Length: 136
Image (tube, helix red, strand yellow):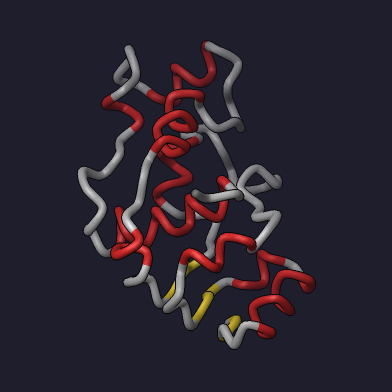
């Protein structure tokens, strides 16, 4: 359904961690053989990467169109919880979670505002504006 994994993560943040309507909330610690996600990532050379377990979970996660229709605002910020669950060792200083495409906007018919849109770059900000979506 989603073409851009990182865009999907921003939508998941809204529905799972903010609105709490996409349940249960994913916790990387629940699916690892270790109770220390940081150590797990470091021991396997996965620091500053999306852990395979998180990528598999979020890639397979289906979100009903009715839930997607409830999304009217998205927040883009390096401190999103979904990013912490995907990459427990990540400092926000690279392009790991950069959104490359807004093709998935069609899945969010009621999206009206994107906060933190400066993280998208000029081209994607212009695409939001062309669709009548406020880019703050």
